[in-house]
Image (cartoon, rainbow, N blue to C red; front, side, top):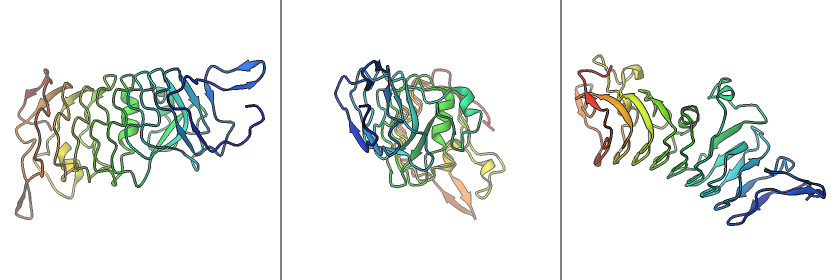
Length: 278
């Protein structure tokens, strides 16, 4: 493909393609796509031989990934570049995948990581469901997790099974882990099989509806209805009796909309009650 300078879309789904041969005497051991700066989309689901994909890392021109773009690419270890997620199950089953090394995140997880060897993720403004987006990405790190969770925007209503089976995510729960996504309706199985630790935070004793520093984890997602198996088989250590307590705002008692909490903490064998998580 040495004579090609333009490629807008590529679909190599269910093939054994893992690289392009660019000149007669050179075959790369990864899929080199950074030579196509106008590339707009990739579909490569069920490419079992694919190990590395290198694309341009342009903050103004993300490469679009539709549903199942890399699903079941179980040999895939890295995807370099800037990608926009437009569907569900994007990386489902990519058990070897990691996004960035720890030193890449040291430049800050909020801003664009301006390195040729970086992975940047944007979630499309119209994408309301992140169903199983990273399910089975068991090689993901806690740094990958923290980078991704703050990119879940207000338009998202479902993160069902988003990180299910990501057993490499080991680190403490944060009381504001849902700060960026207040309109979630379902977190069903979202973190099932992760290894999140620490406290499942309730609100503080001086709770104020206008002061988010006093909120508990669930206060950030007041519309959530389905939390079935959300934290199943994690390493959470403490929970208190106020975790589902109603809020009293201006003298009015407000209850959570939760209707399904079956198995929410099943298998959390380290979990014990305490007087106060805050």
